Length: 297
Image 1 (tube, one colour):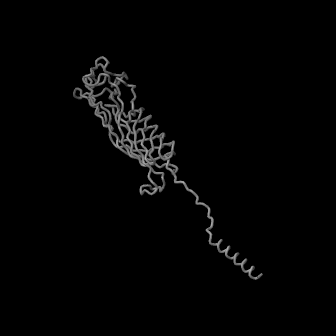
Image 2: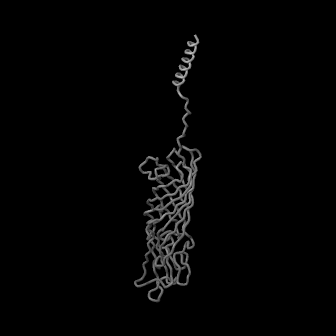
Image 3: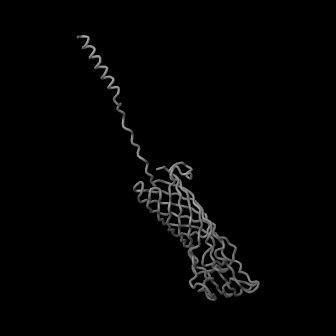
């Protein structure tokens, strides 16, 4: 009897051990890893290139008659009457290229409002003979030494321009549509007409426009950084630069340094705008660009 009890106890213990071995083991739950959500927040820098189109409308020729008493033209040493003609043809068109830096802040990751600021500097290859100068006078006549003649409708060409603009847009995940506007500046190199003297005219104004920007996925073959840090954009800007108006109404200085205008005695406006002045430089830019956004998400 004692042996039977002992055998039953051993059998029960073995059965319990085998049953426990067959039960599933308790493993820790898997760690949840959230999928990163793209955000436009962060600093960025990049390059752009495009084309500028003349947006000005002033092309009416200006012709001015000048009498001998104004000391502008001379036949030998004898002052003579002459005619100054400004064709006013403009050529504010050509290649535009440069770089930009900026910062965006997105209020809600994924989709939402984005605000930012951007500064850019651009090289421009606009025509250096935007306003051509020519004059007709008696045969053999020349400008009196020391006289300066310049087109009251503006200096020629534009060497560079830049902007500092705010940006306001809405992000649809990796696609950002935005409007932009702010301060603009530029400088043009040209010659004072009829003199051969080079001069630069620094100008300030404003720029407005808009664009669309797209952040490349990490698996895109165009994403050479293999991160969510590369963005492509297409942008349009209208730029308006007010030129210096120090010589507003004047078109020449004679050899005594006196400014000559259409209100000067002996000067007649043959054709052209009555209120001669330096006009604004206006052009539109369409450009494409690439940015690197610091910080992947």
